[in-house]
Amino acid sequence: MDAEGDEGITEQIVQFATATLLFTVASAFQFSERITMLLFFLSYLLAGGEVVLRAFKNIIRGQVFDENFLMTIATIGAFAIGEYPEGAAVMLFYQIGELFQDMAINRSRKSISDLMDIRPDYANLLVNGETVKVSPEEVRVGDIIVVKPGEKVPLDGVIVQGHSMVDTSALTGESVPREVEKGNDVLAGFINNNGVINIKVAKSFGESTVTKILDLVQNASGRKAPTENFITKFARYYTPIVVITAALLAVIPPIIIPGASFSDWLYRGLVFLVISCPCALVVSIPLGFFGGIGGASKNGILIKGSNFLEALNDVETVVFDKTGTLTKGVFKVSKISPYNGFKEDELLEYTAMAESYSNHPIATSIISAYGKEVDKKLVKEYEEIAGHGTKAMVKGKEILAGNKRLMESQNISYQRQEKPGTVVYIAIDKKYAGYILIADELKEDSKEAIRRLKDLGIKRTIMLTGDNRMVAHSIAESLGLDEVHSELLPQDKVSKFEEIAEGSTSKRRVAFVGDGINDAPVLARADIGIAMGGLGSDAAIEAADIVIMNDEPDKIGEALMIAKNTRKIVWQNIVFALGVKAIVLIMGAMGMASMWAAVFADVGVALIAVLNAMRVLSYKPAKG
Image (cartoon, rainbow, N blue to C red; front, side, top):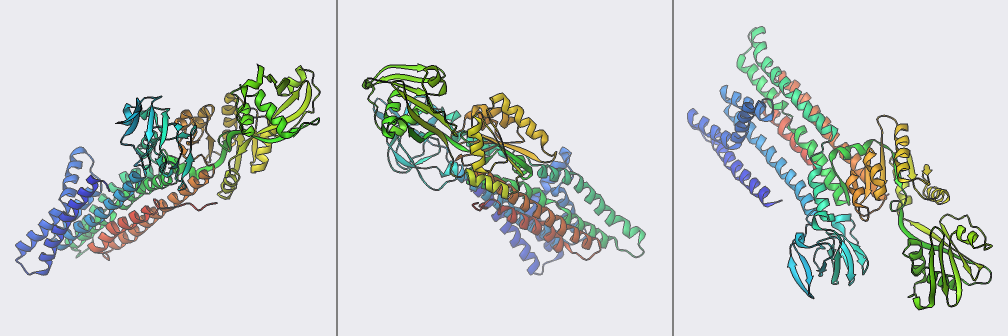
């Protein structure tokens, strides 16, 4: 709980305790009627003075029909007919409910603020070999910062020196520390566990991951879910209806029923007003969605508004990008196949040397698989042939490494391979020496993610990719996807997605999951755009409605489960609140319910609904 929240609740408790003491003295001791009324009235003012004041202020603003108005009319009416204890008691119990609601809301906010307490206070800037403690806003892109054990990483960047274990739980929801070393990317908000690391800053503080996450969470409550909007509209019409009904209940029966007591029916009308307060709905429903967003954040899922949280319940189709979403986006040598008497290690060595001057991801993966330092002195006459591959003299031998077009252009007889991946053909002194197969690795949880989505009722899972048909279909088959569309240009992805969306039923939604700059248009077009936020592009994260902080596809299933649990609890509150109120309203109109029953129907129901809504915050989706 923040300091302001603590202070406000302490004041409420002191005020409430004093009001309760006055009420107890007035009830327990025999005073004259005037003193008794005065004690009850003071208790009433201490407990409900703010409610009465709010009611009058709202009336001046033209906002007549709200819970403050209902409570004020009902309690003043009780005093008017001489029911002093009940008038004061109603306000006392109402304030108990308000106090517990405030404590519950503060607890929810505290959980999220604790979770989001990742904003760094300072950065250790390296200047002329010494560290200077500065504000993160003062650090520029390209500067070197030092992060010591136990400190937060203040800005996004790349490690240039040192290695360590970092706690990423505040961003990703993952409790297992991650090992990082020179060349690895680190994000603002990570906590350095042991070693000292030097980081070259890649983004200014305003553009850093921690700032964007905080902005997302802080702005999320501004986007209301349809259920919240429905309750707001419901209360707008419901309140004047019950006020008019209560007035008619108090006035008409004494006129038309012989012997009916005006004070008896006025009391019933006042009870009716207290019962009818829509507090349980007005407070607990937004709190339910607020808790759902907080619970998702704890699991490394950032949802930009409760409207998107609720919309997840209606998703029928999930469309995926491939590279960086279902696969790691990192090329890796998956097979080395030598021919004509060459050996695997010999083929890999020659190819790594021939590719040693190239920055292409395929060349990098081959050099990585070689695993040794390439002696570039042994490489002569290096030539990169655009769209074909490379040519170089290595240890006096001519090495050709590239695609089938390279082999054909050099008139080399080779064995063409139809494999799911990128095939690099190698020729040594114009003689075919074999091939190396490069493939993009699947993420460990991709298959499980697709299975879980189907278990949760997703009818169609589709992949859109610019990769070749064979690779795309191989991946789709291994993951159990329903459809795959390959060899798409970025603009083709949008048109293909629109075809899929148009084919979906009107009330069901289509989600798109991506991570790259080229995915941003589709993420913006989708009913729900989901971005991989760990290593995803800024454009994708900006365009998305939901951000998965650790890049795990299985988190999509967790997000769906959180959405379903949130909706279930919100509707439990709606049905419970309206059901209890309906029963007690009928009993109140028939003279079978007193002010005490009315207090339960209002304050008690609101309190139970709030406590129920709080369960959303601690919900942990089961692993698939």
